[in-house]
Amino acid sequence: MGKPRVAIFDFACCEGCQLQIVNLEEDILGLLGLVQPVEWREALSDRSDEYDIAIVEGSITRAEDEERLRGIRKRAKLLIALGACATIGGVNKLKNACDMEDVRRYVYGRAAAMPHLATEPTRALDEVVKVDYKIHGCPVSRRELGAVVRSLAMGVEPVIPNYPVCVECKLRETVCRYEYNEVCLGVVTRGGCNAPCPAGGGWCYGCRGLVDDPNVNAARDVMDKYGRTPADLQRRLALFNSPGAVSCPKS
Image 1 (cartoon, rainbow, N blue to C red):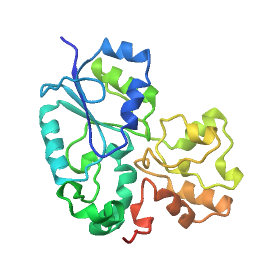
Image 2 (image 1 turned 45 degrees about the horizontal axis):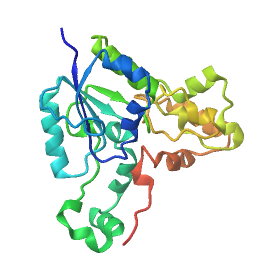
Image 3 (image 1 turned 120 degrees about the vertical axis):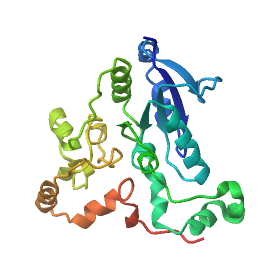
Image 4 (image 1 turned 180 degrees about the vertical axis):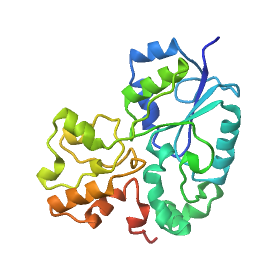
């Protein structure tokens, strides 16, 4: 059996998660022994409509993007959503609480009416097509990215974590950010990143999205213990998980 053919695509994003592939450095050589890249705009001039695995970064913000994504899904045996923009909509989804005309005028000014700048409410990939696997984060973890690709190349089901970031902080013996009078989203955010933000002196931003079944009671207990309220948590959630909590700009 030959190597799985892999194509990498991008939609609305900063392409930082694709840079994490490059940042694998020497480890990328091991992955190339398992898969055959056939399309990747950032690194290859080749294009192909024949691939087994599609790795897709970015969120869907235009009608033509939706059509293109459906074509990718039709040709791919497996589709992997790469990074927060693809898995949960990312920071692009902040605009969804606002009027799209206001968004266009605020961002583009007098050019807002140009057809190629038309924008729609942001959607994650699985709001448009079936997604087989999600690699979470902003940006994604290089370690997790490599593990998922290796597993799929060898026909093994990859393990996608579904426990909160707090678990990894405890394993690392990182002092809880609430002890520093900060609001951290690790109590409800999906782990798997090895909690680099709290370990580096920052709070968890929630870029990996919520765990499938957040322990709301445990989160409430943390809020009570440190004199915080659900509203404090909600404000922090606005960046990646609750766009309705933001104020909309006016042009």
